[in-house]
Length: 119
Image (cartoon, rainbow, N blue to C red):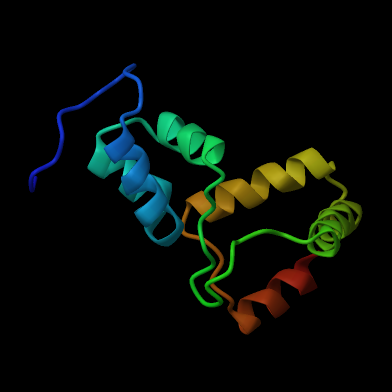
């Protein structure tokens, strides 16, 4: 690794580490900063949060903050999927996480049509 600091588990944050987070966290995110600083993801996220830092949306350059309306839409969609499939909302969210971890959500209109017909 190129000129990285030694791993610092459990140590107080140093001013140059805060400076690195302030400069890079909004653009490269938690994992990249944690790797570079040799801190855990949790420690890095918590420190960035305490500094008021947020990751910027890649396309707009604005903080990636969901509006109340957007969150309401997600809740509504989870509820609708649960009602349609007969599963609980918790089961729907669990399945969404599993699908995402397995490779994400690639839109395939033909597959969508076949799936909808099988319900």
